[in-house]
Length: 115
Length: 234
Ligand code: SF4
Ligand code: SF4
Ligand code: FES
Image 1 (cartoon, rainbow over the protein chains, first blue to last red):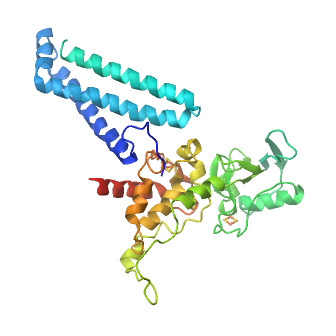
Image 2 (image 1 turned 90 degrees about the vertical axis):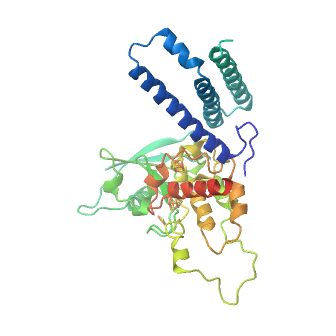
Image 3 (image 1 turned 180 degrees about the vertical axis):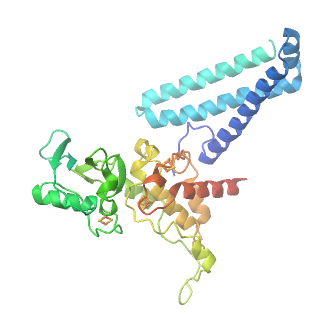
């Protein structure tokens, strides 16, 4: 048993499951956005902003934001444990990733809610 | 035929190097790579490699032949030669002791970690613990592993984390005991594997399946362990 406190869920199974779940959310969103754009070839600004006014769309988008954060954290965490062998450099890389993801999520929430 | 062999004697050499040998192969016969090594050793007795059974059961002569891991004793030269040249290197990723001989310590440590023996606290029956033919069948494709390390040393995840990732060989054996109806430590075994490295560092690259000289499928066993972990957790 390897204990690793910086992994996302601290259990291999949990990380693995979250990776799959977030991947599904991300692909659903991608398919939805592409489909929406294809079905509305002459999309207006009003239509687009109305879409993002809807509560369900905001929830969906927030879910996507969180999924991006989770998915990339798990992915980058395992890349860093594969390739960055110096503890200091790895810690720095992981902190940087964490910070960037936090910024993206807060910023994304601001954009979605037009704060 | 040209044979290029990885040479390294830590007592004499500063760094490993490739040494070329020219060898005349008997016509009309497809030798095994191990036969070629034996012929070369007669020429140059300093070449070191491990071998014992010379028929693919002991697992001692795992090596990298023109880029692919396998057992030298059951790999025909015709299969291992690339562009008229046979390149022999030690198994990748493990420390080299000398020439084609590697230190298997890390590999065995992972094997030891999965507790490769039956755990059963219930009182032993007078004769033996019985298994139905169906229960026994579940061990097929698992128990045949000869621990040659061809798979684990072909696995990038094992190269990067040989101390934390159990590796395909160890995981195949882990599943062999998880699947055994006579073993009662299933839950304990699963708990020991449920961390981000032991099992989950496998990314399904399937190099292991590609090289196993016994035709076993560690990736499938790893998938089964994952399913068991998932079933237990949900
Ligand atoms: S399938 Fe898994 S164990 Fe096999 S080589 Fe790939 S990462 Fe390694
Ligand atoms: S699974 Fe195959 S390649 Fe791996 S150690 Fe066992 S016999 Fe060798
Ligand atoms: S010498 Fe025994 S497996 Fe090749």
